[in-house]
Image (cartoon, rainbow, N blue to C red):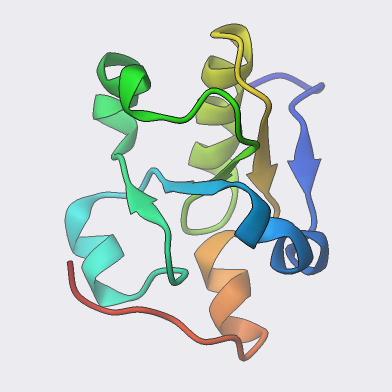
Length: 105
């Protein structure tokens, strides 16, 4: 993780998430319990080998449970040429703010 990892607040993310793509880098079971609606599951351990599945023309919002894994994966995406930002607070913050969630796979 870099001290320079691009990060976006939950409020800013909520306002712009429809204009980009959201990648959830948590594990399958975590995602199934609750996720941001529309988030695409690409677990951290698979992300590097699945970069071709991500739209390079869209801003990529990277989310995990709290913001730690998403920072590391944002660094990977930025190094690979993506316009990517880590969502501060993660899915936990999203839920605690009272926003709607998806469940299941």
